[in-house]
Image (cartoon, rainbow, N blue to C red; front, side, top):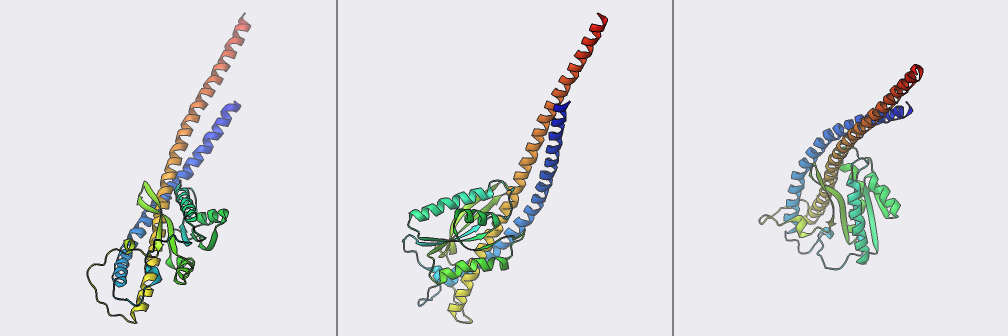
Length: 293
């Protein structure tokens, strides 16, 4: 029965696929818990350094204002920096597609507003490939971060953007990543990273009087750089947690779909087998009747 053999081959193929997607679902679930723990563990540090930066930026440094704290003038930015955070691997649903689609819309809006230059730093292989296909000006990148974000791997590519802001070569820097909401929901965001706005820093809690060692300018410069690095690290950690959650959901959906297809193929196989048996019985009965006649 040639048709039945083909169906059995397809059933075996889908069963093997279901085993693979089920294993990937379980691996993603394990990694998701670890990624969420890392993401939540990084939040207290980010919040503490944010408060410290808010207090220091509000301190009396009337003769000096850091480039990261430049006041908004209302003028549309002509030179824009962009840090794109995506995954290195696929099989995570529409995670990368959603953030890249929103990113492209933002880039088109900046160009309509008169942006003359857009520099891109890519964190993650999927974003790097997409930006290269678009012909974007990729000035730095880092890929193959693994399952754990390491700040020492991020500092080099990100420093290109930070140095450009300090030299006055860029007006603003944005970061695009996927924010983790919960296991079933991840939100793509494109938000301003530099200059740091009041909304980012928040309101200082009370009035603080600091003793600086060394001088105040050196301390503020170093602290704000550490704060920006913490924001980027937090974005990467959020993106990794979102990646594992999206992959777990995608693999579960693939496993369920494979099971549905297997059931449908088994039904088709049983019908084909039943039809073949009925045909054979009819042929036997017909042959017996011809002999008897």
